[in-house]
Amino acid sequence: MSTILSGTLFLESLDGEKRQLRPGEELEFWESSGEIRMLRLEDNQIAVRYHGRVRGMTTGSGEGLHSLMPTYLEWMRARHGLSLFWGATLYLSGLIAGVLRWWEFAYEMETAGADGRRLMHFGLPDSSR
Image 1 (cartoon, rainbow, N blue to C red):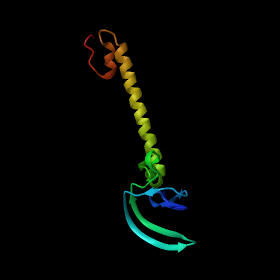
Image 2: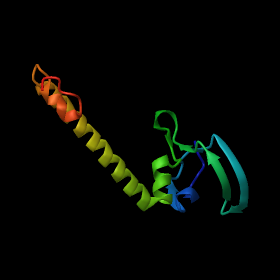
Image 3: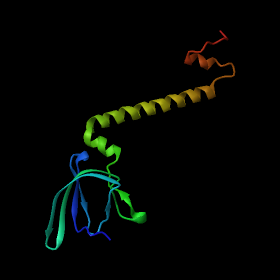
Image 4: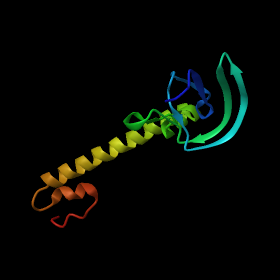
């Protein structure tokens, strides 16, 4: 049972995005390096302020375990928002164009006559002329 009563995580890699911790929420780190900047007793509770780098930050337990670490896409969005959007748009456009071209090629190959005259369209020699 976690003794966290409340807390806020600031994810600096995501431009300081805040994530609230719920009372009793278990928080676990696989690896942590940093410093405790404040540790004091307030109203029979311990208040802690930590600043550092962590790996594998998770919350929950058992099957309810989930990661609080930002995904690569979240990190890219925070660091390269507009360029990520245009890059993804260009990539998807190229992918769709490639699939459509393949589809057209497959259709033309399927509908080509037995003598192969339609293959001239793809730059292959037509021996029947």
